[in-house]
Image 1 (cartoon, one colour):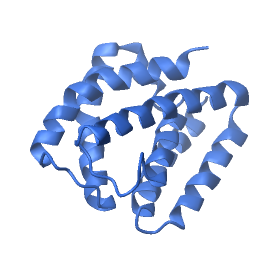
Image 2: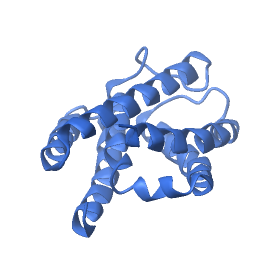
Image 3: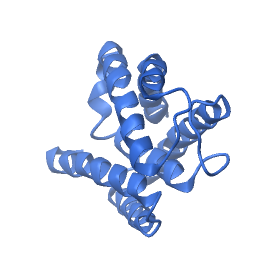
Image 4: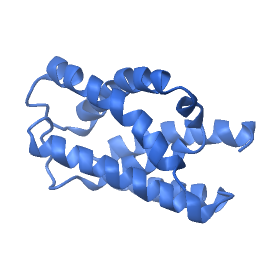
Length: 162
């Protein structure tokens, strides 16, 4: 993927994150996410590989959030997960082989970025989407940091797996 497409993919990750999180209260925004994912697949040079990577990462992410929800880390209105959150995993997965792939070159960097970025994304998303944090904001962030230090490098490997 060349520079212009990498920038477009990085922008898509931002727009997709906002559309998913705000889509919790405004479900029509989720249609934009589905459209964006369709465009992403259409522009992919390896549709089959991309589709498989999207599903592997999304299934792993949905499993993670389902377990965290069952353990009382998150309080969702929907069981096992709300649609906007499952779509958010697809959005994140759509960057794993593209604008986020550079992180996979150094697992320590991936762990550091996961430990910082994962909890921040969850905490901001929870606030905007009305997800309850029964353990408290600080406690949830501290719990998510090591989980995401492990998860981000793992997701990058899942996405790259052939």
